Length: 124
Image (cartoon, rainbow, N blue to C red; front, side, top):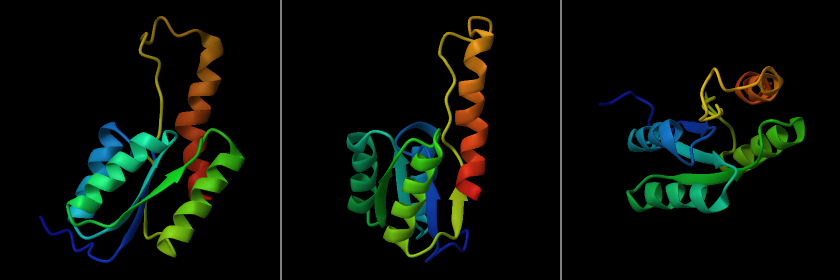
């Protein structure tokens, strides 16, 4: 598929595994330089290395988007690696594996902060 994205630059949050990893790989296949984001250096580096081995251009940015400082650090790393960002994919998020009914009301603010407020931080 040709999405006419050749030469664009993307930051894909939460891309060291799962759906975000798939998005980062798909963008790289389209000729997009991608920043692979995660909290684990090992996992993010594995994805970036595999993208590079396939002929893509990939960098790593580490940080916790649940904090203002963490989000700023990720943005700083991405901008330094790419020189700018044309595409932001807000994919980072969490949900406890114990399910909806077993998640206490006290846990929801943290989940909201990670899944919603982190997107606001990155867009800003």
